[in-house]
Length: 612
Image (tube, one colour):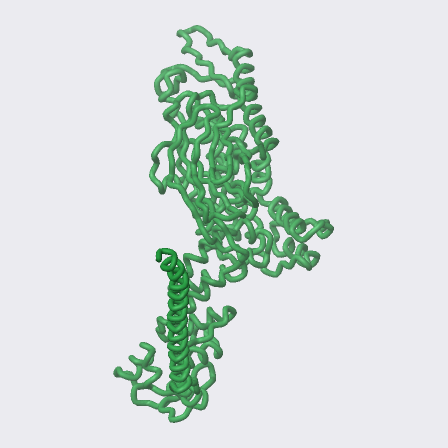
């Protein structure tokens, strides 16, 4: 019996499995039928639903019928010799026309209006585009004509079009449009465009414009002054690079007809146009390229002037005084080659240079004797007006380090870029110890800016640090910036640096036309300090003056380096003329010579090791 039950269990199990499979198959078929029916219903509803086909829209019809074909016009507007038959209801979108047609003006009851266009930037094409935009919901703005459209929209107070013009201008800023965009933004009050154009010029002035004389000539004196004064200007290499750009820019502004392809005709004309100048060198046309020819012309133009006074003191140079007042001229005397070129050009007044050299010498004397003399926690305005600006381009990532040439008051600073870190190191080698500062710690202030640019050289991302007051020991290195991942090479690096307390620059406020009357301007640089101020000498206990030594005579040595005090002679006793000991004069001369050689050695050392 048990075996029979076991035999029946197996067929029943197979039977139940078959039943389950059959039922499951029916459910699947039912689901598939339901889904197919649902899809058929949805397809049927889609095919039977109404379709929307775009025909001529209302806006397009209005634009075509009322503006292009000028149907049912109730007002005729004439400007620049052309008449548009328009409609008051559409023109009233402009506050200009709204006040005209709804106020007490005589045009409110006339069907003809003549608009006198005084702005030469407004063109017929721009007027047509702006009038047409009042009949449509869009406007086509060509970047080549965007300034004209902006001028027209500003005339009619159409804020929407003004904003769209600003967007187009910001998107299309490049080397050729930045200057015109900036001037238009200043004229029509577009703050965003003005800011964007200024940032572009600050970033690219020394990267692009010094290579293109046509673009460089377009920069006005006012704009150049603002650029030179800007603490955000990317001064590639040192302040002397900016000086050479200003020198070329002045020449191009003075010679608007200069053409690099026709220098043979322009060069003699430059000399003939000014009786105070000799003819510009005629051998400059044999240069290897256009930039070399222009550079030679500029050098000869300023160096071969017959006048002794500086160029800025002449009537034709007065217009260029503001940019040079904004230039950090105190950093043009930090390298012997730079100083030689500046003196040979005779552009900058000599009393400026004399004051800078004297101030530098004073700072050198104090730097190793007054450790607290380093600049610390100055106001931002004071720092930005007096800091040295240096720049560099990093084309690709990787470990790089460099220094900028020139005497830096015994402080050898090396910049190090490694991956995303930017560091500064106080470099101090034992073999150069006599040329560098002896202070264990040196204080200075620094700010760093790093910018990425796109193919149009527009800044895409900028990272800036705050103004930092650092105190570095010998060979100490600190990180000054952790660069953001949004910074992509090539990178433009700008460093604002101040290593000694700033000196007063009030002497740059005036440029005198007759420099011969200025004592400081007639004294050679080698004799600075020979004519001392008695008021200053009275503060030094070791140097008697006529005011506090009665009856004594001060005798100067033949080389004007040593002072000997002669006491008054007793009555009836002949006075004895004393001469200073020769070894004193020799000692002083030796000290000056040593100081001179130190400055020279530092300059040569820095120049030879520009890239570590």
